[in-house]
Length: 216
Image (cartoon, rainbow, N blue to C red; front, side):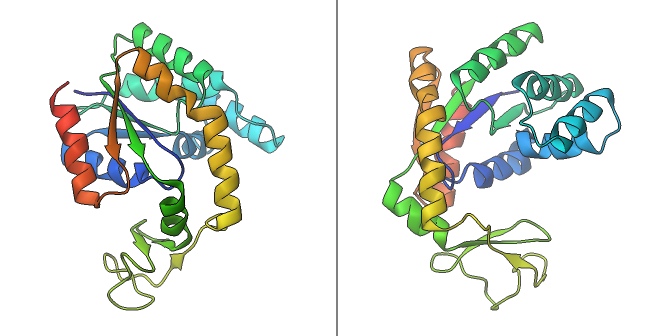
């Protein structure tokens, strides 16, 4: 069992690699967004707190997110957990460390997916996904075999994110560098950080991540 954090700017490929780890290593991906959506409709006490906060248009607090993560950790995971979208700040990193200690868990690796900003813009602005199965494509590097049809499930529901454009991406990158990139130094100082080339071929990135995990 291995618990890891995938770090990197938006579009670095964290979601793609997390999906592979789920499929290949039976790990559980703890995505902040997915957990919030699930909690909102769960009917639990935590779910009602999430729904109330979101209904008022407010940001969900770190305490709530940590509470959701604690619930998920309590359910167990054979291959370990992948923390996706959390932590985003140094305060959240401290909170996660405290939670793992409380639950008798360890953080075994933090993998930074390094990218070049200009190449990242080119990658993101050409990206689209299948609205049914979530498969990711790209206009230049990975188009669908049949135009307008998902290779995996055959759906015609292919979508582009509204913020997958150059101006929106630069705003998201600035947010990442201001709030999340300090985590790179934080985990380096704790001797937990490893780096991979996030712009390499998907299989090469996956192999590099597997090599890191096999050493833990």
